[in-house]
Length: 369
Image (cartoon, rainbow, N blue to C red; front, side, top):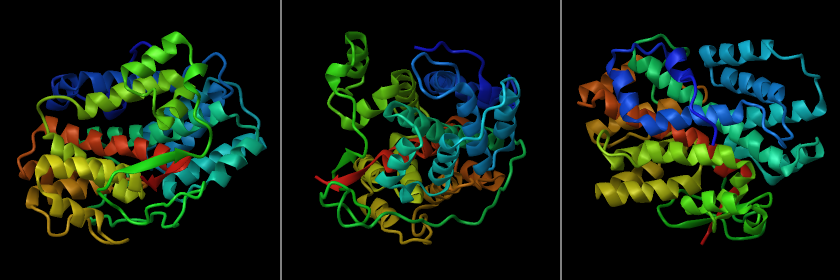
């Protein structure tokens, strides 16, 4: 596993060493360390990976810019300056086109887009790393924005105008012909990949042990992501550090944030998992169903309790592309009694699904199980 190094987000967010935000991040040490670990795994040279560091940094620079984050854009631009210029090729152009699609409209991705990447020279393994990179920077930019807002630092494009629900796929069948869900649901769904998952026997014993540790061996989705196992390992530990920790924001509200992000991004599969968990934990099934039933353009927080309204509005604004979460959202959360740690939990839960949704939506699709 890549070792924990410099805390990039602490630096870019200008987090004061004696602040409540610094303490909250230390309390969420696993999420903090493995967010950095994910960055390290993606942005250091890897043997056997057909995706150069210069290509990765060029893509990350653009994804950060599409997400309206000047600090992060400048960071990736500065790292690029230390490397030789890269040629403008059809391969790079295909990656940038894919990156823009995944940034703004991940629910519009289709199997044909992955085939276009293959035609441009991207291997299956490199497509997985490419997808992880785009999704990670989408997450990273939102975590950074949240930290800057919590710490009272300026951000780009802030707005207190409510963000409405967006586009989702409504095709009746999957690419393989299975029955596809056409609306958001709390029912259990299946998921099928558009490019082949790696077979379990293709992993060596040590790699199989890592998959088994997280319960990933039987999942097409995780064996697909296992084509870049170091990134998957850090991503899984980031997930656990955000959602499976004690204290802070109640788990039901972390699941609520995941549901909101999934609704904004149009990810029916992720919303089905996390709306169901939010309902089970909160015993507010009707309130959760009202949220996922919101039509395109509708306001997700309508008819919710004041606390849930503040949380939903913030999570939705953070999930927009580019994000528009503002200091007013943080003020509203504090007025509802949320502590610094609870706000960090809420922000990281919503931000993580900028990552998760972009993988689920662009590497495969759900079916009615």
